Figure 1 (tube, rainbow, N blue to C red):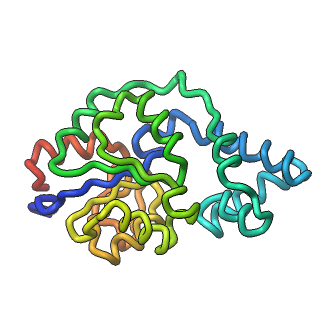
Figure 2: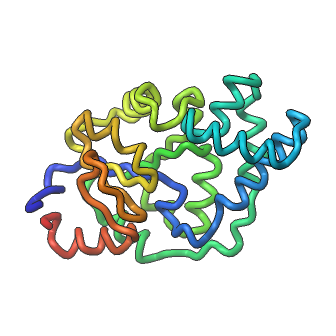
Length: 218
């Protein structure tokens, strides 16, 4: 692992459950709004809507992708409504802000959520100034991670060199494609033994603290 990050000049971060802890439970709110949207728009009951929400996430990467495929749902309206959540309980994290800002090179967010959602969350966390660019699912024409064509579109727009990039993500499956392209992958979350994960930790700030402490040598 020695000097494992010494070549990195682009640091890519997922947003949800990566740049804030899962205990913040933002996705609980988002999932509730997704189910409400589906019951109202598709005229189905809550149980059916919740089952579809989960099924589409598994099959297509996001619930939205499934709704667009099967029901031609208009994505902008969906994204605006399901991200209308309360962030008042989200805590500012100056330490995380500093850990990210002090990384050498560009710092990018790439989320399956919207750019607007990412901007609101980062503002609430007090970490907005740490990042150079934000890319949302709209930047991949609403095609979500883990699809290769989603990564291709965003990496091209961001001018990412895969071989000098590191990607931090809580959804392990979203790291598989980047790894095949030479990206250094870091899973933030419960332990996963997937072969395409290079490093893992349950806490992003703790991992970055170790990284800074070792001078990008582990």
